[in-house]
Image (cartoon, rainbow over all chains, first blue to last red; front, side, top):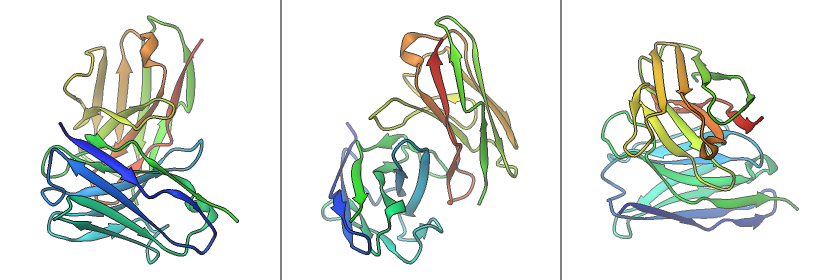
Length: 119
Length: 107
């Protein structure tokens, strides 16, 4: 059974940093692409970042230059390093992954971890 | 980035009703369109991919259609467990984008 479990969320001051983790089981994080998707309170879904199996990474314009996606194959874990955090980064952050190879939507989602940026 | 526009933003319906939600892409995305269902406090759940392919385990009352720029999600006979928010998503390009969501509420 595939499972994604996020951790690392919490309260952080504006300008601060936080690292989110997404531990995967039931599949290998390096076998396909994996993404972070966020949802601000009461708002819709926003794609944040992706890392492909080959290591290429891409970011939404709203986080480019501040967030870094990475993975540790030995731990089968995905990460999101978030720096220079702003109030508008407050959201539930989900890691997500497709089941199929190639261009595919997200079959698998974690339960989400809440990041609150506030002084 | 490709913009996805859903309509309506919300709707009220009764159990047993037929419900249709539309999604329009700002440029052609072929059939790289997915629909998700999200309930409060839960992660989104994939319902349909490739515009019209039902995800395994999803009831057949859900169906999707369309290609290019215009897409539709239909729930043929609304059940109590279907009251939720629905999102479309394009995965044509890596800068994936979602529609703003359609909240289906009980009339």
